[in-house]
Image (tube, rainbow, N blue to C red; front, side):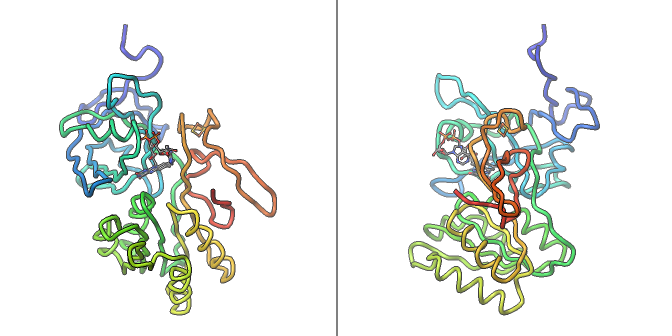
Length: 288
Ligand SMILES: Cc1cc2nc3c(=O)[nH]c(=O)nc-3n(C[C@H](O)[C@H](O)[C@H](O)COP(=O)(O)OP(=O)(O)OC[C@H]3O[C@@H](n4cnc5c(N)ncnc54)[C@H](O)[C@@H]3O)c2cc1C
Ligand code: FES
């Protein structure tokens, strides 16, 4: 009997004709060879895998459910969601930037080049970039910076001017600054020198609005920064999108583990972050 009695076998990247991959389904389970996997600082790792054409169709803000190797003798239940950090369509590579926080990511951190990693995706609804937006502001903190990187990259490639405000505890945790710098202007705000204070970030946002550099807002990774962008965006009529995080189990819609409350036209609404998000209209997000 097959090892995969209840599901289609995953597509093995680089092996023509493997697995079951009906064309109409945009999501698939794939076994991806790890190409590189390095620490970028004490807390974060950068993972690069070879990916299938369907995985490489991932849009900024979408995510993959990664089956992490167990870091110990026990079993590891549930996949862990990680948003796509970079898509190299010409190189056929998919990149993730993640913080090692618990058993799942500790296990993931053990994957070595040459190992096969089982991923499901691309999942969820990503960011949208409207053609009339010529200047956008992205504001992220911590792991949220990994999620904001690809929308900044796509915006930069389309000639949209990007101002990236990177909030972090210390300069080494202002992740992906080189990627943001390659597509726009970077403003780092840090806990170490107090510049990450909400009042200072608010002053920066108001200056960017006054300079005509804020046609749209994008944010991820911090509740207080989300609340700030929402308030300033509402005041100035600036559209915005926020990528929300929530603990997930299936990542596909049926389990309802990932439900959060949103507010739509004054009415509270429960939505699943995995399929109705993770990117939502900023004004509809209630934060956490
Ligand atoms: C759509 C989405 C995209 C994400 N993208 C990234 C990314 O690009 N980079 C990155 O570093 N992290 C990302 N995360 C968070 C990542 O999924 C969690 O850090 C990871 O699942 C933790 O697993 P663990 O077993 O190591 O930790 P656990 O032992 O399960 O948990 C350790 C800590 O992390 C918290 N946590 C667990 N799962 C989540 C979760 N899904 N969201 C938020 N906090 C969680 C727990 O409450 C706990 O405090 C994303 C989460 C979502 C929902
Ligand atoms: S994680 Fe199962 S419905 Fe969202």
